[in-house]
Image (cartoon, rainbow, N blue to C red):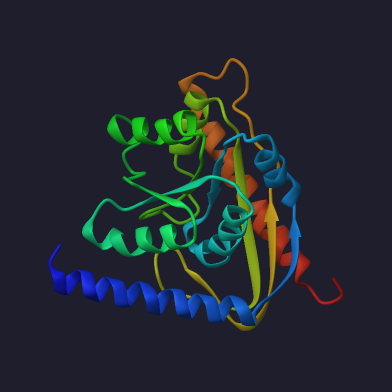
Length: 227
């Protein structure tokens, strides 16, 4: 990477961190339901696979930074390309480790690297369940495969914000507006069932996708007037 590109990426990281810091400071997180699931893992030193939809980066990142500051070892899968240097630098600045790889390759080297992070380093690994390119809200099998290999649970997370702008992108990226109310819901750990075989993979992915959808609806309900 050239010196000019390094300078540009450094400036971009600083600007994004400043923007998110200001946004987070104006928004009010009115509820975090299910926080005990992450607290239990942190207390026991047990890793997990944390998943959320690609559109929910903004306040899922806020939650992960909070957990990392509380002592949870966390790694986040990010792009191996040169452009992935920006999110990787932000992840490091928030006290977490970037894992440079692609979730679209659910086998081979990428899966081995993810397994080493979870099983070897005992870090919880964060994956966007439908990323990096969608289709939107289609749960990919990588998290289930990794959970089976490493014998760790999958923890789904969702949030809602009001008011919130949705981008015209494949994932309908959610950007809470300044002074939004935010609700975060952390689902119960999902364990790979006994007797699981590869033929069960599509059904397991569908179940986890339905869990994420239900958590998103629950977060929305927490922001309804009177709640």
